Image (cartoon, rainbow, N blue to C red; front, side, top):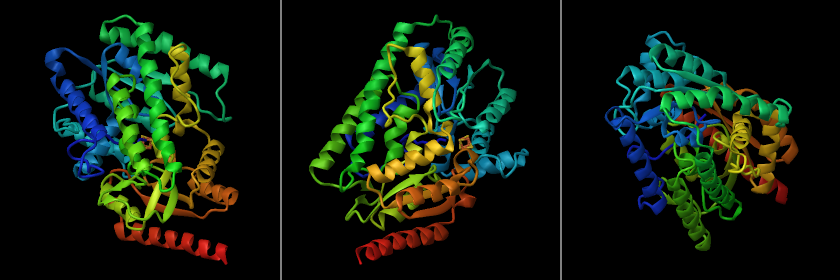
Length: 436
Ligand code: SF4
């Protein structure tokens, strides 16, 4: 899923005036893609890998630069490129039902592999599949393997079918890290595994994670100083992508935290595409990824109604940290294994229901809204059951809308706006009814 976004020149900034954290993130991204573009000359090597269950610190401990295909796909959508990329992939025989991240990525590759900053992305030196819950990832890399002549490594992450991580599951992942993944990273990078270096990075990860959780939990305030879905995708950018474990990420989250603290001190709500939100009328929990082709318009539909997303599951696809998990420098490989197994898409449905019901209670939300994504089975399976269960447990009304990640053919603005307005009216009526 992911599911997430990095801020570049093309993405709509959450506010006209750029905060230090935004400028910092923009600089980090520009530098990262600049290094990738120059890598054929500098000799730096990379690994293509996915967001959920990513092994960023481990890759960086070998000086490998991560490339995340889902991020490139969503960035292509925000730059208005996904329609043509998807059409190219469908012309090449990929069905309409295939996840649109995959088709967008393939179309981008066939169009010269130009990344989010407009620079050429190098071919992969390694395809590293950390398999957490979504079968599509496996098929996606099978396709890339046919295109690129490079080594591959796979980490099989067991699904949390019973809602827990057992010792045997942890050992199984650690064993693969030691015997399959690390040897491949040594081969591709030409460097030896350095556990001390990895631990230093994990210590920085934990610091950044602490601040990220603080920022996400700031939405418990009234008014919430952040939007934990539309704004949240900016906040998770560095930690879910190429920067976890770096000093840059630590500084980014420190700056972000102090900016959010400032908003709390001044009693301000979140920033929206049109500036500061006025009155906070509705507090919503959202399940499912956002739509990227019309991200700004989608966000505005909420902001125009005074609706703030106070918690979302999408901001947990690259790691669930608000349950207390932090990367642990004292147990580097065990901690990476637990991280992979704890990602949202690797959780079973009862755990997801519980998480959402807890969010409604802890963030004092008016209800749960599901954005069901046409092409993402990993998120969409079981969502109607989730909706009913959460409604039943919390007594708060649920709403359901449908769109897609990066296929503009499946974003019907009038339809979505209509449903959202009805949903907010329903919440309003329940309030009036409850007060009567
Ligand atoms: S199906 Fe969903 S989780 Fe899987 S790759 Fe596509 S967007 Fe990501």
